[in-house]
Structures are given as structure tokens and as C-alpha cells.
Length: 375
Image (cartoon, rainbow, N blue to C red; front, side, top):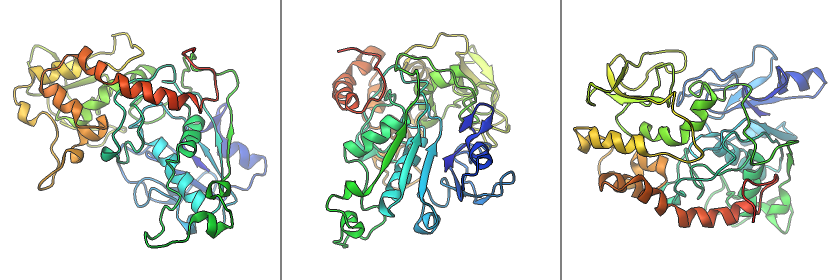
């Protein structure tokens, strides 16, 4: 099972529930933040044995992000049950892809226990240019893609975005389908999606548990698509405060702005600008809207005195545009240039529209639930 603390049935984990019912769970795979969800963002998680169940727990964030042949040797079916937040740079959809690729390669069935998308009621943001693909964004989808995990998985298959020869040598002429005895290699992979009841893409689903340490409440979940851009800048994105992704700033911004000091805590052991007095914004009391908002990012750039160093620079010689973390978040280098050129929020968002229109046509093919838009 690929699970984390959001994998619950009522008040207990799906793992505990199935174990009580005699289901033989041979391994637990945990994504970023670990199976129990207590690891900080970006921190490698080691393999271990889950203390409560005695089941071997394997990290898919750290030493290897994809299950190996050995990992899957005693597995009959992989169950994926993780609550997503519907944002491209949230890493769980990429864990899903890696799991699907490994299971396809080694002939294992995948079952997804679908869950509602708390940001599933709109689609917005720049569509990723695959030149900028990384672990925080692999496929040509917008930042907010308006799909559940199950719908996204069906799109990965239907659009042929799954790497069917993942892990095989490039000079190996034997296809996965031939290896497993199928004329069509997609026939060799079985995907089952257990759908949600009573869910539509008009639903405003309230999460029963937080999905990760720094998305502590629904306001953070709603604002995350807009404010995560600060991770690609020298500004604090609020880690180490009481409201990550709702508080952001820097010591060099005007001292007339809201002030805060990031400190180490259980959700972030080494937050950006740790123990430094910062000036910026606290948007906790501002209403969340069904759109990506760039106004704070544009204001921060306008007020920042050292614009040459506003965006984090890659620690490598002869860095390419796709090496900038901000560009990986955006999925292109255009947004950074638009900000530098002083483009308005309206103009920037308008430039996304052709890509969004094209994506929506693809998205429609794979929806399992009534959409927020009607034809």
C-alpha cells in the first residue's frame, strides 16, 4: 500500500482497518513526509518497520522514489490511497506516476482508492513545458488541474504519459508488452479506480486531516497554489511560522510591512531565513478565491531592493533556465521574465489561457465526476 496519515477510514488508518480484517499487507510505501507524515518537506525518509503494525515501511522519497523489482517481488496488488491537494508541484501525483511505472514494468496491478480534491473546483495557472519537468512537476498540466488522483491516473494512461520502459536500458529492443506476453503493452497493466460517492467538481471538500506538516488548515490549502512561488525566491514562504504559505517576507523589505521571525519547529527544522526578523505579508484574513493570485509576488518583487537576487539561483556553473527552482515551480521561464518586465497580473494570467483551454479538452476525457463547468 502507498499510504500516509491521510489514508483513513473514519478515525483509523486504512492499513489498520484492513489488517484487522485479515488482509495480508506485505509492505507500506510512504511518499514525502513519510508514512506517519511527520517528516519535514524535502527531508529524506529512511526505510523502517512500522512500530504499530510490524509491516515493513519503504520510503519513496529519498534513496529511491520508485519501487524496485525487489520491493515488488512479493506484492500481488498495489493499493494507492493518499489524499492529494490538486496542485502540480505537490509531489504525490509524481509518486503516483512512479508507482504506476514500476507496477507496469513488473506486472503488478494497481488499485486507487480515490479521494475528493479540495482544489478540484477550478483549473488555473501556466501549463508545464516538459523541458522544465522535475519531481515537482512532470506532465504538461497547469498548476491547479482540477482532477482527483484517480482521474489523473487515467489521464497518465490515456495520454500515454506513463514511461512503459522505465528502468530498462535504452538499447533494449524488447518492449514491456513483449516481455509480459501481450501484443499491446497497455493490456499488461491493470488499473482499478474505486470512485468516491456523492462527489462532484463543484464540491468544496474539507479535509478531515492535514495532508502535510506545512499545510495546516484549509486556508493554507487554498492559498498554496499562489504562495508556493515564494519557495523559488529568497523570501520566506512562512515555514517556521504559525501559518506557512500565508505569511511571507524578507529582512530587506520595508519595515513598515507585517513583521515575523521564522523559527525551527516540528514542521520545518531549518526554515528559510531562520531566526531573522522579516517584513512582508500576513494574508490569513484575506478571502481565498478560485484562482491563482500573483499580486503578492508582484508586490514583493517591486519592493525588493536587490532585484538581481530576488529569485534563488542554481548552485551550478553555466546554469540553464530550467535549473532555476522558480522556473520548475512555474513550469516555464516565461513567468520569471514577465515579473522582471513589470507585466500586470491580468496580462500574465491572460497569457495562460490558450494552454488552459487546450488542457481542459484533455481533462474532460478522464473525469469520473460531474464537472464544475457545463458544455
